[in-house]
Length: 511
Ligand SMILES: Cc1cc2nc3c(=O)[nH]c(=O)nc-3n(C[C@H](O)[C@H](O)[C@H](O)COP(=O)(O)OP(=O)(O)OC[C@H]3O[C@@H](n4cnc5c(N)ncnc54)[C@H](O)[C@@H]3O)c2cc1C
Image 1: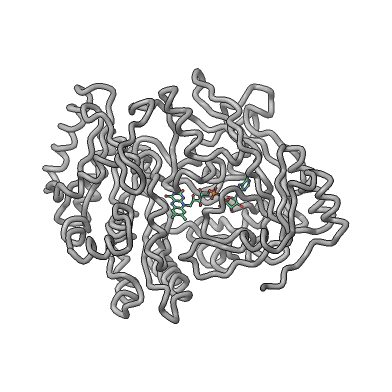
Image 2: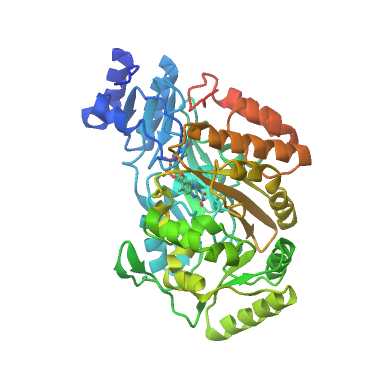
């Protein structure tokens, strides 16, 4: 068994006094459960020293103050679905926010919801649907924390008609790394939760830039998020049981189309035109191998589908379009505009069996309930790129993928799926996001090096070309190398961290 660093007795006792004995533990079998990351990750995460579960903002503040007094490093987590492991260094304190799981308010008039950290996607989505409302929902699966996603990540399938989650973050309540409670935006002036900015400079960018801090800048205990109209049914009808279930939507107002184009440039141009015409609840170029994983129920099923060659024939240069309308007439209008654009760029429908999968599982566009299937291959997978810029630039980045990717394929180190990248426009094409996913066999002796090597080559390609294609991870050496491409953001990041977290206790990162 791994040797676990413990907290000094007096620190443990001080923490216990804040939450009571039932909400703190340092027993080995409990800590063992916190040492795991997703099976595809090659890392063996370090062990925390203890885990504590506060129930209120005041308890969070007290815990953070104790950590500062004793130099104990901490990280706040909810469902731990992220791929990095729970703590970045051995001997840290895990602050599990799972008890703070209340929806505080759903304001239908001003269209925002106020939530605590452990409110899950599946919990909030159902409540807002009932009221004819929705919000941008990352394709991270139903069990994930809405708040954690709004703070750290937030790209999703329907950002054509909305945006990244971070753009919907309104007022927030924040326990700073040293243990001060700060209320930001309109909240600071007693005006409610509706706005992220009060008078004076905006503080939203402190906790949430493009990438987020991953627990490195204190703990956010409540946020308000903006809500949109929901054009779909207020209660979803499910047929069957997992893993064989269907969630269809009323076809008179909801339809899915997938078109293949002769070149990637035509995909780009069709995507751009759909943005200009402001049509489509969702428009995206999606991953073809990941799709094959998502829509099959076992590794063997995946192999059969992939080896049939259908997806390689139909999907490398395809565009997915989901139209959602209030009335059949509105749907007919959007469909006509879409068909004109598709015709102009030489698109044609893909094999109907592929489109049918989406028609039967419209949850793909709202809350990918079958996302965990991505983990089922029993092998490894990893993403790279994860950046955003214009649609045009994202396709330039895509065109350069073969420069470094084929080498890994030819050596048999990753699955032969060179088109397994997605480009998703946001705000009707005012920006777009790119992500490249690759699969590998985790029985290979060198498998743990594969993700790092692909990411390294991807970064070198970005630097060579001057691409804005990545979300730089919070790893100092990488930030220094990529920083010049992003206005030397690392200089500001370091200054903010030093100013707000002088003791460097809030998830300091691996170094
Ligand atoms: C298969 C897979 C697919 C994914 N697809 C997507 C996707 O399409 N889009 C997308 O956006 N993301 C995606 N992700 C990443 C995903 O967004 C995050 O893992 C998830 O949203 C985080 O929720 P969580 O409950 O697991 O949070 P956790 O993993 O518990 O926390 C995530 C991070 O936020 C920090 N954090 C949590 N709560 C707080 C708080 N209250 N205050 C300060 N910091 C906090 C944590 O320290 C941690 O660094 C995917 C991940 C996987 C494994």
